[in-house]
Image (cartoon, rainbow, N blue to C red; front, top):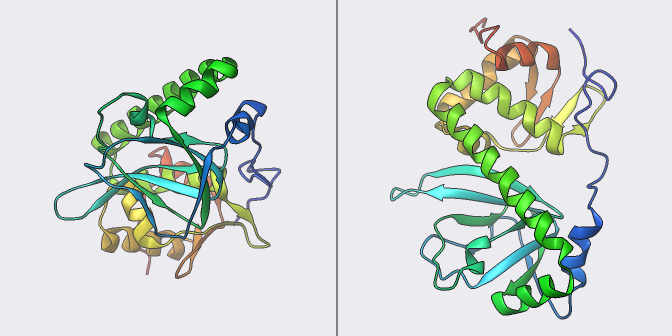
Length: 236
C-alpha cells in the first residue's frame, strides 16, 4: 500500500494563498464584516439579493435546496473567494442556499458600494470575470459528473478534489475533515449509499474512515477508481 505525501501527491495546501486583487476587496472603505458560526445560514432561496460577499476567513458552501429539504452542494468556497453575485443585478432573488461550512468571517457589500469599489480598483473587473467564468466551468463539470458517472466514480473524484483543496497531511495520509452526509451532498447521493461506498474503500485499504473525517491512504488506487479503471468491490 502506498502512503500519499507531498512528493507523490501534490494536493495539500499549507496555507491559503490570496492574490493582491482579493485583498483589495477587504480594504475598500467601510465594508460590513459579519462573523458566522459553522452551520449558520447566510441566505436561502427566495431571499432578496442585496449583498455581495467576500470571504475573509473560513469556508462557505453554496447548494441547491429542493422542496423536501435535500441539499446538493455545488461548491465549497474558501478565504479569498467571492459569492452572491446576483446582488450585482437589481431586483434579483437568491436561487441557492449559502451556509457557513465552518466558522467564517465575511465582508458584505451593498451593490452601490461595491460598484464604487470597482471604480477605484478597475483591475478587479478582470479578476471577477475570470473568477465567475472558472466557477461556471466547475459547475458544468459537476453537472456532467452527476449526469454521466456512477456514485463510486463521483465519490472518488470528490475525495481527490477535497484532498487537493483542503486536505491536511497526517502521518498516515491526507486527512479530509468532512462528515459522510456532507460528502453525500457534494456527490448527489444519499448518506447510506455514500457510507457503504466509503466502507468498501476502507476495506480495500484506500481510506480510513472516522466519524467526521476520512484519511486518504492510497491516492494512486483512488485515482484509478476516479478514472473508471478500477471498481469498488465489497471485500468484507
